Amino acid sequence: MKRHIKQLSALATLALVVLIPTSCITDDSTYADESRLSSLTLEGAGSSTMEEYDFNLGDEAVITPKVTYGGDTTQLTYRWQVGKLTDGVKGALADVDSTKTLRHLFTEGGSYYAHLIVTDGKQGQTADYQININRTFERGFVLVSNDDTGKGNLAFVKIPTTAEKKLGVTSMVMEHCIERMNPDLKTGRLLNAVLGTLTYPTTINRVMVADENRCYFLDPNTFTLVSNISFGDIYSGFKATKFQNGDTSVPYPFAYDSATGKYVHCNLQYMFPFEYSYFVGYPFDDIFVTQYSQYNRRTTTSLYLDYEKPEVCGFNAYYNYYGYTSPFIGSGNLLKGQTLITAMHGDTWSSSTYVLPTYIISHDADNANNWHLYTNVQNSNIDSAYFTRQDLTLTGDEAVPEQGAFMPVSVKYHRHFYTADNKLYVFLTDGTFAFPKKDEWVYDFGDEVVTSLSSYTSFEQVYVTTMDPTTHRGNFYIFNASSLSTTNHGKVEPYMSFKNCADRISAVLYKPSVSK
Image (tube, rainbow, N blue to C red; front, side):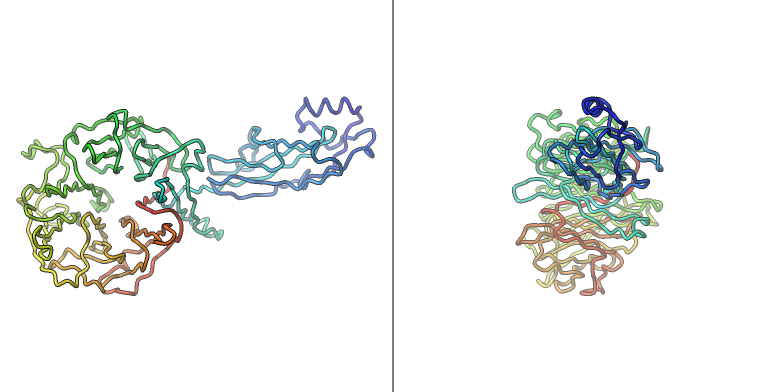
């Protein structure tokens, strides 16, 4: 829309344009001699409605206005301002850009408006644009990955809400989320990402991501940095090799340095590192967090594995009360002369003993064909006195898990899962101890290399990540646990799959919609 400028001298007009905000230019203004002015038009100027743009949080909002000018375009100046748009009400404006094309990174989802002023020093045009920033990180999956050089890549797979699905919004993938939302933040090789949750004395949720030196506390809805802590503040030279979420009994996420056998725990409320005295002097090779059902609620507990001893332990802060000498109550000499393969908890509490079952898989150190399954359903501690044993002699046709294989469980369908030779298998703890045959896989990933396996019991979903051996890029598969059964060989398809969505993926975290 062409604006009419009040009759002022050219010099006075220039001074007003420079010293007074262009928003003071009014629709009923005119110049003394409009014929001398080069025509300036800005599409959308004077419109009663704003043109709308949609962007995802983490992506730059980029808008290039349609401007036509009859003179030297280098004389044009641009002033972009943005403000919050709440229920159609425009908030205060702040300057963000002075180039023709707006490029601005919003740090929170929601609706905004951009106000543009274009002027050649004598005449000006203004227009407003509505900007909708989709809440990318509201609900979805965090994928922890690293490239071949060790550069971290935190990716996010957004799962659309019900309202978004009705609008035709589909899932999306965003890589390098930490750098996108925190341009000045540089991380090292990423170890893991966990959702730290505190409910008392206040409710706090943080996505916590760690490399070998630091833990980064991120806002769960924006992935912007809240704070970060250095593990070296507790132990000089500490280099984390694992970063693990806490569980119901140890509600502190922690980093572990396998070279020194030391731990650094993280306080969630005040975000500082500390040494949790219970863990001092108890090194382990693997730590598995297991989800299970307790009184129809999802809860977690951990198993601590030492392959060299070999031994499996559980943590109990009240060990003195039960007559034990250590907070890590273990299997002792139960596995003497054997090679520890893995351990896992059952799916739910025993109805007769009110104990969460514990399972240990091993084979004889001097005969890898003689395998054993130890079961404890009598005592909540990992005490050798309460385990029973089943034996299995391999025929050579079985698909057996590798040492350190994590075997997540389905609470509803009472089965565990594992991978071998890049195939997904089902393992049953009920009945006679046996492994499925090599050709009894439920899903074959072909040439892709399996890099992680996990589950989320609330959804009864199993998550598998793989790497393409040619591109070294990562893939992410979601399976419904209901379809993964011993009788469903070759009939299973992923519920969802995301190809080429990250680098080599080592961990998956489901992030629900949460408050800060």
